[in-house]
Length: 171
Image (cartoon, rainbow, N blue to C red):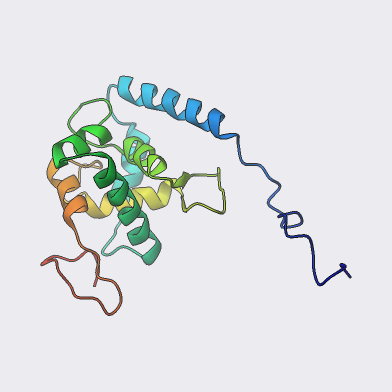
């Protein structure tokens, strides 16, 4: 066995391959992605269809956690709802697309897609589409200002906690 009771505590041998990209690289990639989204004329139809295919009556525990993380990050950085919406609507077309929503989740510290770093929460495109679909009440496949407000204002009922919203996200 290992001397003194166990394998080295330096993270070797956990099978994660240490594939995390250097932070500077992902920051550069992120600002490049932001530029692409700002120039995007309209949301990708394929991603919009992915949202429209979802049938979401309530959010799962993981999705609630991710929505809360996004909301906390937005409240931390923006002083009012309108600025929060503008920070999400990168191409200023008046709606938040799935691509913009994913970008916002990433900005809130959620690893998106395959770039999984176990220390951070992670989300697949389909999970993000489920969350977006849940708040997309008019069925357009993206979020308008009032739908983002609902996302930002909702209170999540924690187990044993009081329900403060007249229309909770889940029951």
